[in-house]
Length: 172
Length: 190
View 1 (cartoon, rainbow over the protein chains, first blue to last red):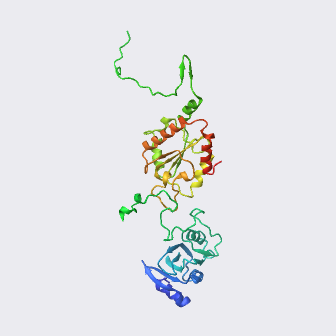
View 2: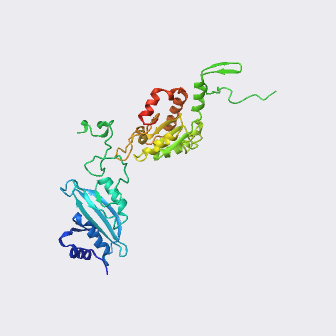
């Protein structure tokens, strides 16, 4: 049978009811979200189901929405059914004050490095991850550089002259 | 009768005055040891290219036949720190690469010199961002900075000649001085 977005949506609603929300299609790819406590259950269901078979994780990444009160950080799972060549995006949101999300490493081995990267740049704390340390940045870094509250420039510079960077008073 | 010389009879042949100040006489020449050692060192520098980006490509052009770094006695670029005495850092150094640069520097034997080629190695350049080291002088002491993004081969040669001046005029006692030791200590190098 062909796995359409409507079918995936039906199956998810049948299984999780009101818990799965925010269904939308962009460029023919379905995306939806669920509460962050359910993320492993949803992933497990998509993995185990004999017709859905989303058994390959293409990517896992973070997004920062500083204006969404209580939902500042998103974790996005990109799933792929390799047999039917169907892709899917699944998001969970968490607050920046307590960025705890259950780790998907037990289900997908590839989540190990991807979650380390997401922790490295966004500070999302993946509960149950076997080795949650920085992977791309230096260990001495004490902030999460892809969160939007951090300016892009290196904050350790003391020799910078704003006039030279188009931020001085003459440009105001 | 020999044939008369017909060409190049009006121009003076100029010889470069190489050689230190000293007393010269019939069959002897006396000068300071400093100057002799400096002369030998400056004309036989072995560079160690640490090329990470576009400045490294400019350095390749500098090494090639048109600009020919070999004219300065620097024919032998060593890709090992063991016998080299000039570390040439060319290109962006990420913060994660910093310890590697320092390790290469530590593995070089004294006397050693460092040249930072291009904006990135000198100050981080346009990459004023969380992942890039804002100048290699945060990790190792630097003798000469070459500006440019990337600098032309002429600029690299100019920086190299500045290094030669430093090497030729350096006192043999400089590296035992308290000031030099304090500089090394500020980088955590014993």
